[in-house]
Length: 208
Ligand SMILES: [Zn+2]
Image 1: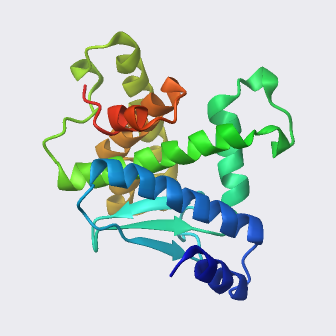
Image 2 (image 1 turned 90 degrees about the vertical axis):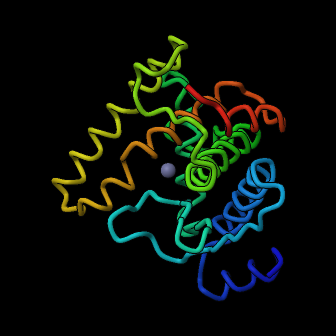
């Protein structure tokens, strides 16, 4: 299906046009990152119409079964604008409205999500690329602190979601070592503040 067919299909499913357009932009970002990492490997992106039962925040994912990316369309616009505010704007600059998010910043965060998901595919298909999982393995001091931060964040999330009833296997895939690695790489990409192919490739294949 081309973009226009996807747009028409999602409209008939009752989805909001702003969410549909953002989902298509995210698809383009994932395709761009994936093509840099896997120039010869076909890419499969699936749009989903419902949030995962136990996470209302998942808007993208890489699934090893079937080697595909998922994009969850409902509310993706507001979720990604909020993510942009949290990641790129210091708290003092924030305003209750999400309108302050510039399109350039949003586009950078979309590429960051692309880098994150494609890193999951790299973990699966190029396992020799070393991962950011243990802070003491990381040579650079700043990146070591970033890795430690992500380890702590994922551990806290795991604890919180276990209390909320998430199952052990799901906890491991949602907040385990692979997720720590993908989050570190996503932030390494955003820190460069560049949307060039070189910046994407540097982050996709970053190693401790
Ligand atoms: Zn992830």
